[in-house]
Length: 281
Image 1 (tube, helix red, strand yellow):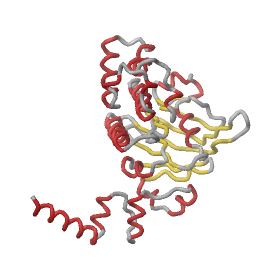
Image 2 (cartoon, one colour; image 1 turned 180 degrees about the vertical axis):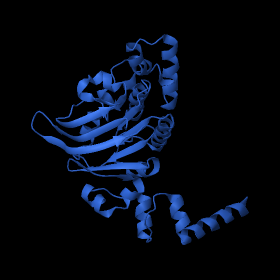
Image 3 (tube, rainbow, N blue to C red; image 1 turned 180 degrees about the horizontal axis):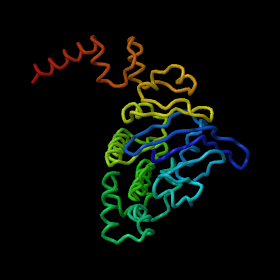
Image 4 (tube, helix red, strand yellow; image 1 turned 135 degrees about the vertical axis):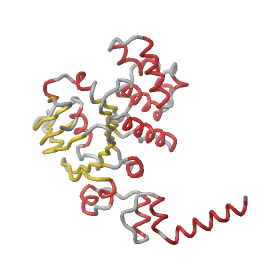
């Protein structure tokens, strides 16, 4: 049995708006999965159902063998952590240290354990020098890492990131990639909602495409980005490297390394450049 399962799940808001219908998906531990699709596809509603922020109006969500309908959100959140798209929706403490430590303090862990875990999460999130800073004195991009650290430190088996690359520069995006790989290597699963197709192509092997309140496809990332019908239905574009490869008559390419190896002209240019560099040395 998978650690997290959605069985024929649907959700209708109190105002009568149906956000998703008949959605089924499952997640083993130790994975990194991207959920992609345009605004209104139902992505955020789906992940909020995963950690009990919402309860399905149709179907069943199973976490660690038990239905979320039988537990409070706080109980589910200890297993499935959720990082909001807007960090301002989560931050309420007056220092980064207190924000990261809050859940551990509520859990009544001892001070030595709290200090160790806070320091480790802060290091991974690039916050070691900001622990005594008020979170709102940090730029938006770093505030996002504060909320990631505060969720990570609780050690959930599933970590959900909602649009983590929004507002990030290249350094922040690279840090996110390292963080996702680290958490996955610990045997946990990272589920990420994102519109950043370049980030998806670099950091994920599995993707789930959603459109019009349904799941269209659950497949390897390379299969998704070269499925013309699914991309059209979901109104998604290929990453830039894939677009360049397509323009050169190559399909199935998602990385610059693959493009260089398959395109003889580019490989020749690279070889000349390398040789020139060697001569200059």
